[in-house]
Length: 106
Length: 123
Image (cartoon, rainbow over all chains, first blue to last red; front, top):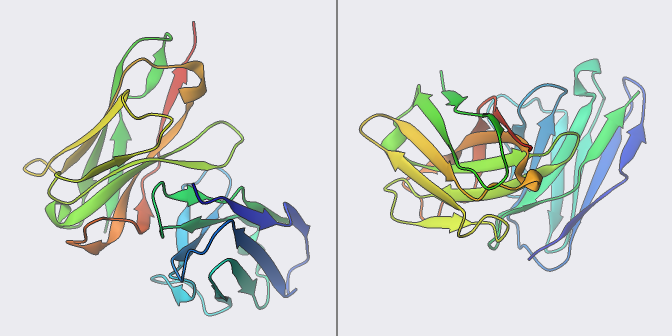
């Protein structure tokens, strides 16, 4: 099973900040890495798939990069609505696995 | 717009069975793979299983294989999760979700998520 480790677990930031979240895989996932955002009481929402492709209606302030085992998600200027938990997920191999999440809080 | 409405959750005793349903609308259900993902209270996301658009390819997490079965009714746009031998550690919010790309085998890109249905396994 591919283990995804996200860091940091919690990130304390302010609106307008530039934020970078990390996701490291225990083995190569090629480019098959996605990012999801989950706000309290809501279902997760796909932000980024296959390393760097923004999903439908995702603002341009969200970008992502990486390859093989090291990936990152960047929010260029944090909007108040971006406070949430962010999960990475790999689809390179079964079972599909998620990272433990990074909580972005104020 | 895409909608996924889960139902069938509730409180059940250990060892018993439960069936979750997920009614889909707003897209051509029969052409998309579907997924179940769960989230224990206050915890992260755990993939449960995936079924291909035609129902012929099914994948399961080790934690549920042999106890849970995914199926679909493409004539009624409904996804199912049959759960048996339930354990307290199966307590979670169960999300059904659609794959991003139509007619993909295997389906692996979880795109749109429903709101989830809560399953509580307790004596």
